[in-house]
Amino acid sequence: MAKDPILEAHSVSKIFNPSKIFALDGIDLEVERYEFLCVLGPNGCGKTTLLNLIAGFKPFFPPTKGEILINGKPIRGPGSDRVMVFQEQSLFPWLSVRNNIEFGLRIKGVPKDERRGVSEYYLKLMVLEEFQDKYPFELSGGMKQKAELARALALKPEILLLDEPFAQVDALTRLSLQEELLRLSELEKRTTIFVTHSIQEAIFLGDRVCVMTKRPGKIKENVGIEFPKPRKWANLANERGFARLHSRLVSLVQEGENSNDVK
Image 1 (cartoon, one colour):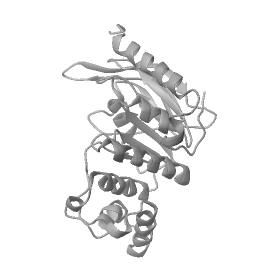
Image 2 (spheres, one colour; image 1 turned 120 degrees about the vertical axis):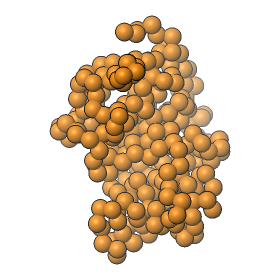
Image 3 (cartoon, helix red, strand yellow; image 1 turned 120 degrees about the horizontal axis):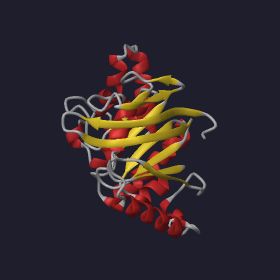
């Protein structure tokens, strides 16, 4: 049981009609305030469905059974306390990096001077200052994802939801973005739920890894990550216990893929 849960999912199941796809089955989950939770599991196990349910997005929301609570209150749909960063690039191509970062604030009615102060802070934090007037087509994949993160963080959500945000970038850029996200999570102190197919990524980023079974997705096991933060790949790969933990998670995911627990 989490000591100070910001999010609770109680017996959450999801069946998509009329296709009758049984996506999630009896998910019970607590996420502690400021925890970095990685959700890991085989392809099609319902990881993204769970993330979209937490976000309150249709057609995923509401759950077929169960409920999801934020700060003890049932969610009724999307809310400003949650922001999602998707795998696919979603920057507005007609806006500059700065204006992309400020977009959500403008929609919320934040005054121009305040918007400018927030965007300047995140441009500096993400080392994007020299790209502030560039448009998305002028950016590398890594720069685009940094701008996506800046736009999400600028809204000051309580919970940051990330659906494989680094899947489309090259391997070296991915390592750099992982370190950047970990640095930001320590600075910003936000609760983060991160969906991934990468076991190494889950170990590097997470305070805890939630391993799911194949569809219908259930939580097979929660695994705590004890390596101290901040983390750097150059050090973590040689950390005592890294290979053992990696092997354990591989076994859990493979067991989840071969599970026969279907309804």
